[in-house]
Image 1 (tube, helix red, strand yellow):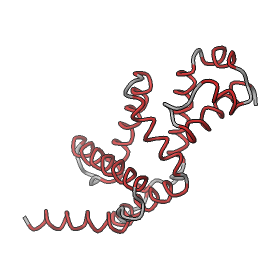
Image 2 (cartoon, helix red, strand yellow; image 1 turned 180 degrees about the vertical axis):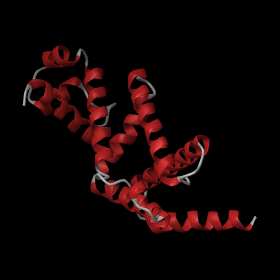
Image 3 (tube, one colour; image 1 turned 45 degrees about the vertical axis):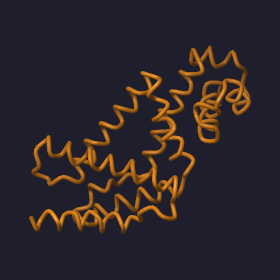
Image 4 (cartoon, helix red, strand yellow; image 1 turned 60 degrees about the vertical axis):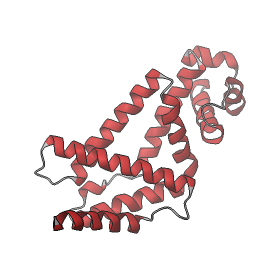
Length: 188
């Protein structure tokens, strides 16, 4: 690898181990085996390097879900269950990456460029989950509402799994809860 790739790898390592706020340029240099001048030369600033590293980490996090989306499963109940099982497996497989994703989201509120990137990723998630979990004949507003709810619940559940994995809802608990809510709505 060249210095640019080494710096990105070092920044990702630091983000996983220390988080954004606790990572210095010297930490990145130590983790990458490069020098301070390389950061400016290749990225312009430490913040630009960290932003690029975060973007790549978020992409890595999304890649954990494999090539087949839950939306490709015809049976709705199985599709819904698969989403939560895949999510639980991704968080369990790489808790550091999941934690770094949360830290990066909160950090982004102070970095407009990063905030815009994360906001765009969230919108893509809303659209994708709306397509996956709304009725196929649902209008665009309904699909967006379903996708927004799924993103909110997904984000909240990941936070619970990171903070208190033993008492957090399991994928089965989540499916059961949604079924109960659906049944309650059906009763009117």
